[in-house]
Structure formats: C-alpha cells, structure tokens
Amino acid sequence: MTNAELISHFYNSFAKGDAEGMVSCYDNAVQFKDPAFGTLKGEDAKNMWRMLLNRNKGNIHLTFNNVKADDKTGSANWVAEYIFSATGRKVINVISAEFEFANGKIIKHTDTFDIYKWAKQAFGFKGYLLGWTSFMQNKIQQQANASLKKYTEKKSS
Image (cartoon, rainbow, N blue to C red):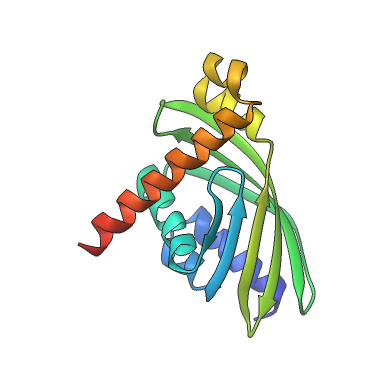
C-alpha cells in the first residue's frame, strides 16, 4: 500500500465508522496533534478515534480530498459534520491534515483547524464570546482529555 493509499484507507475507514481500520494505519508509537486534544501518543491517539466514533454512533458525515504523499510525508483535507455530544449542536469542521510515515504506517498526524470557528459552532454564544481566548481553548483541551481518560479507563476495566 502506498502512503497515499494509507491516507485514503484511514479516511475511508473513518467514513464507515471503522475505528479499528483507522488505527491499523497508525504505528504503535504514533504522535497525533490537534487544537482540541493537544498532543496524544500511541494508544491515547488510537483511543481518541475509538472514542469519537463510539460517541457519534455512525452519525458523522466525513468527506476528504486532496490526498498527497511521498515516501516520508503526506497531507489531506477533510470535513467532518456531526452533532457535538456535549451540547447537541451541529458542527462542520474543516481540517487540514499533515502526516509523516515510517515502515508503511503513520508515525505523525497533525490536524489543523480554526478552533474559534469550531467553538462558535459547538458552544453557540459562549463559544462566540470566549472561543478565541486561550482560557477557553485550554478548557476545551482539558475537557477533551478528561473524556479520553474516562473512555480509556472504562475500556480497560
């Protein structure tokens, strides 16, 4: 499988709600980073996808395009449309992804998106007022990581 095919497999699995298909694309020592979770490594990165798909129960619409890759790096653009479980509000998140590869797996995955735009959609007026602040952005990361920790503890018990 080429690295471009690996990226496509990752997002096709995502679109089908197949978390195990997604995480099979990751190296065991993968590093993931985005504005909502910050930096996650290894099983935490894999469990984040498992948690997100489990929470949305297949009610996420995902599209991706502009997949590019060579032997070391790659990129793609993707859009996720879903209901944010904490507030019940619809979110359309436009994301740019960057990848690094080794031994046929993704070793680094960085998603970039406008956290203020996301916060306005996810939290409504509160997100509009505070979503641009580092306080609110830190709070989003703390809540996201607390949810991941709870999910991981429940999963392993």
